[in-house]
Amino acid sequence: MTIRRREFLASISAAVAASAALARQGNTHEALRSFLQPHVLQRSSLDQFLDPKAQVWARFDPELGYLLRNAFVRDGVDGCHTLARYQETGQRQQVNFQDQPCRIHTYGDSFTQGHQVSDGETWQEILAAHFCEPIKNFGVGGFGVYQAYRRLLRSEATEQSAKYILFNIWGDDHLRSVYAWRWLAFPDNALASMSGTMFHANPWVHARLDDQGELLDRDSLCPTEASLYQLCDLDFLVETFRDDEIAHLLFAQRTGSILDIETLEKVAAKCQRNMPDFFTANAIKASATQLLHAYAVRVGMLIMDRLQAHCKQNNQELMVLLSYPVGSVWHACNRSPADDPDNTDWHPQVFKDHLKERGIPLVDSLPAHVAEYDTFKLSAKQYVDRYYIGHYNPQGNHFFAYANKESIRNWLNPPPPAYRNDQEPLIRFKGYLPG
Image (cartoon, rainbow, N blue to C red; front, side):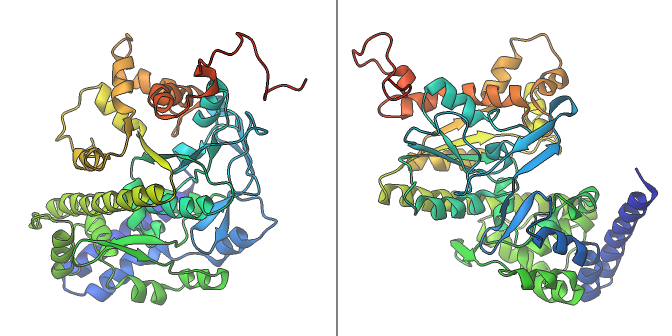
């Protein structure tokens, strides 16, 4: 770690401590100001992000915050570069069956996009090769459930809409849905590294709950390139997030202090939770984390209702795929107790039950990981290292493709070409090869 980086992290830790002290003294304005200070953007980060010729990971989008640019990044397995290209429609470069009609589209975050693997190594391309039909990939790294849903609405309103929609939800995607500016939720050690070529967490459309616990659509705080520069102004941040309920939860989660107890009481009521324990700093942190997650999962369930209604209205079929961070797979394989504070239940049973009640097909990849792990003579750490390098490596994407393969195959009607039994000759090439 460089001296400059150590100094940066130390300054953030000091800001968090100062924020907590000020909040305990009742000076909530200065407490929030101190909390937000490390998150003030540098103009140079935005200059680079908005430069159409810059070699950076993302590009500005007024609705979704950002979409992706072509990139060749040293972030892959064994320290290799990975090549990720995007077509004019915004989807990731197709490798298999580009010339064939496509009836399957996929949406989600970086585990859908296939971050850290090259074109052709994503789980969609593995399935496409096996099924002998194309699968389009509209995943965008960093998106939450709501942002992926809005991406879907935009893409499916065009001529290229598909009959079958695979919607992949990973880890903290529910939380991302409710962030007005995800930058505030980044851990301390991410702010410096995310300020350069990988910058992308600018404001976007997001979702909240109203006083009755119903879904609210919220516009981006900064829907133009010029307005992004307001994020370089601490006074703008303080004014913007002064009454923001999610910012209040993030403050409590990080500092162990409370800006306004009434705000947290309203949050608890919106997501139908009893008021949690706020008596000690550690209790405040734990309770804020639980409350934030409950709020976000409630939003996620309502987004699924919206998405199902959209698909029915447009004669489309919807299936939800659940994927997990490496820690969740490790804990599941290691049989960690459910009350282990490090064992986050990202996709709680209440969410799965909601999908089941609505009749939305669901495939959960976690049991498949555990079932395979039980056939090996490996530690849980050795097992997850086979598949993860942060995101799935190529082997991990292969695992995920086949963990979902049978469910997707049985869902499609007619079945994929590779599985059709329509009395055709044993060997045939029509539609695949010339002549």
